Image (tube, rainbow over all chains, first blue to last red; front, side, top):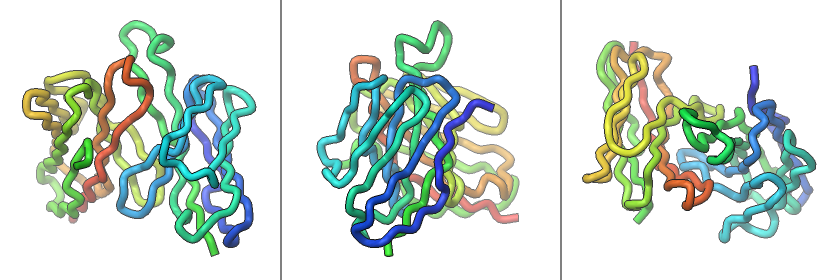
Length: 120
Length: 113
């Protein structure tokens, strides 16, 4: 089945030690998103890629970076994780409005299972 | 004020009851409305998707949107213990608004056998 796959499912890192989370998709969607979700809170958008164009949210800390080497893969890099960065990180994908086609629901976001990050 | 407000619950119901979930929103530009289900330690899964005002039914699930009152609802009939999860409502504008999805904080639902 086509899907959004996140690896690893669980990641433990040390305070200040860089960590990279990965996301891959077989949906051939051109938009990819990274969200941070803390316990009992709504997902918070960090940034998204529209094709190769990177779109950062204004309140995303500089500590968070992203790379999208090709359509299928997207990475979240946390340069110096702090204790406050412990959270679930969600990757999502969507197909742009213009590509969704007639009769197809527009720009729906499909999520991966998430990576739960612990910072020691 | 958050753009999308949702009661955090928890909402506890007996098996077989109707679950009623609600969200309010403040942004008049929102046109598309979604409900996601999120099991513990998993990613959100799309349940329902509606455009503008009206009702949409899919099996045991019914989504309603009332744009005049900025109110969206999800009803789950014949609830099952497997429906126990957090339900997130979400909204977005039209194409000109870009790709951003605005989520409510989620309502935790517990269906007791």
